[in-house]
Amino acid sequence: MPHGLGHQMGLDVHDMEDLGENFVGYDDKYKRATQPGLASLRMGKMLEVGHVLTVEPGIYFIPALIEKWKKEETCKGLINFSKLKPYYKFGGIRLEDDILITSKGCRLLGAKRLPITVEDVEREMAT
Ligand SMILES: [Mn+2]
Image (tube, rainbow, N blue to C red; front, side, top):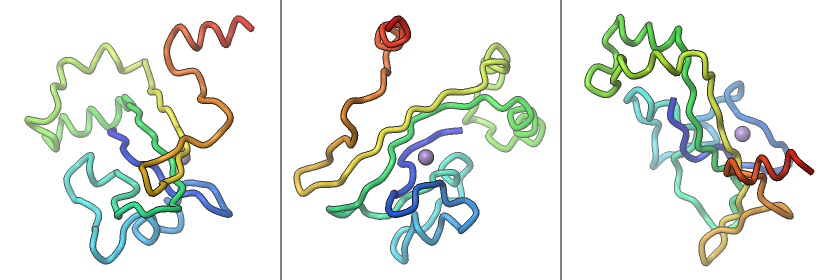
């Protein structure tokens, strides 16, 4: 399960699966891909100055889905199924940053970034 851009943020902040992500994450020019994996990306439209959105890199190991895809050969050639078994009990992990698109790039929102590295997390947990 790849993650790329997350979702936009505004007066209301939540994932838009129930409303229909295609209404908010895509537009007339940019349509959702149909390829497995890319089809799960929640936003594909062109970014504009003033947009606020999440950036959510992550990875999930969902045994039921992996076994289904393996059986159906859905992602044959894209996934090395024999390498995934050791990760079945891992579950997954995702980071989520919130950014503002500016004329010069983007700016991370919030007073400080959440701990990302092992060292950062251990230091945070010790305090
Ligand atoms: Mn989110």
